[in-house]
Amino acid sequence: MSAKTKSMSLIKQLLRQHQQGKPVKFIARSLSMSKNTVKVYLHRVRACALPIEQLLSLDDPELQGCLHPANPACTDARFAFFSQRLPYFLGELKRVGVTRKLLWQEYCATTSPHPAYSYSQFCYHLDQHARAAKPTMVLTHQPAEKLFIDFAGSTLSYTDRITGQPVVCQVFVACLPYSDYGFAMAVHSQKVADVITALVCCLNTLGGVPQILVPDNFKAAVTKADAYEARINSALGELANHYGMSVLPARVGKPRDKALVENQVKLVYNRVYARLRDQQFFDLDSLNQAIAAKMHAHNHTRMQHKPYSRAERFNSGEKPALAALPAQAFELKHYYTSKVAQSGHIYLSQHKHHYSVPYQHIGAKVKVICTSTTVQIYAMATGKRIAVHPAASDYGYTTEKQHLCPAHQHYMQRSPAYYLQKAGAACPALHKLITAVFTQQQIPAEQLYRTCDGLFALQRKAGPEDFARACELAATHQQYTYSFVRNLIVNKMTSGEHDGASQPAKALPKHDNVRGKEYYAT
Image 1 (cartoon, helix red, strand yellow):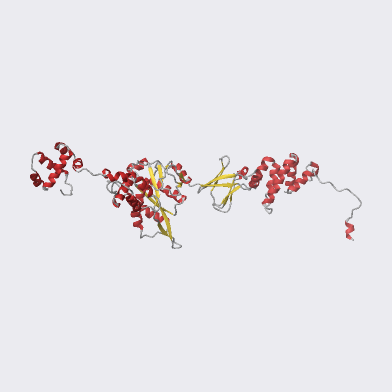
Image 2 (image 1 turned 90 degrees about the horizontal axis):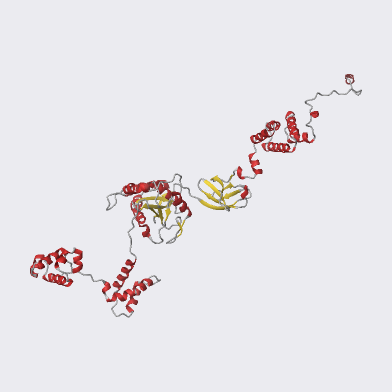
């Protein structure tokens, strides 16, 4: 019989003619096959011990299985001895320097009641066992369930306008596994800030938030990889909390966990890298605009063996299932620990700036959370927020008056309006005098403030009537100094008899020692 297996429909015709009593020669001539082939099939029919009617009722694969039974290797007597040593062979292959050739030679040298496999058969059975031990599984993804993210292995670049040197950029790639909708963006590095920026742009482009974020094990996402409980980067964890996502990193060395994003990277190479290979860019924005245009075309391209594009499947079945984006945009946070200086400030070296803290915390350690817009300071002992400042980037100080001690608050609050308001609440005569004090333009403001402080000190110590009278006298005589008012009070010159302005001047007494005009005429 020919080595090529006959079609089962032809064999069924053979069986029907044999059932009708046709001779072998007639069957062979009518079916264009040799008489020996007919005899072999009739022999196999008798060997299978099934009636012809039952054989004719079988489907073609079942009939072929009856007439052409397989000869599996497990029925070979050599396989039993070989299979016992399979765990040993696979374990030895993990050791340094051990090859299949060496194991086969050792296998051939062992005492066995049966001949050894050839080297090709030895390798074949090893491969079969390895494949059967690690089968692959087809995963079914639900709409808006997961978002896979990764970085492409190859990079893109743009040319610096000033130096003319190429600036290498990493390419962030993401995809939704249900629709295979892809996103790509160039960033300067794989650092946390760049990853967060790319991921926020990705979610904004999608217009919603999936349930689970599945990153690869790059450092910006996973600080400590583990197959069961990976340690997530704190910044990525905060982003996930802000958007209401869970983070489930892929296992280390298991690219099949995120096979769709791995395939998306290959498609990005073909539909973005290859199409931009001859174009030159001079900044990151223009490069990303070109990438976005190519990814838009990629997502709207009809998929092979499917009657829709990625964009059509995403818009119809996945985008409505995405959670809404939060109203407030996410800001990357940086955490620092600092000690409050004696001045009541902390210093952030990354900002080159000092920020005030309530004076009660001088000498204590505080926790600082910085974003691009704010600096928040928390007490280390209680965890309570004690200060919030707008972020600054100069070599200066940001100070809130409420954080200062009372003496310093008083110093910071000094102004003509402050002293006038305080004087008006204390004494009308003092208010009048202080109003006159600030009319002295030639005297430095610092000296005027000190004069006012002295006057308020006298007001606390002296009697109300004496102090008010002294202020009135000082204003009347245009002596706007602290020392003048103090002397009036100390010398008890605030009574009525010392007031020259309210009493008429006394005439000089008469006496003989007076020179007349005649004296000067001579």
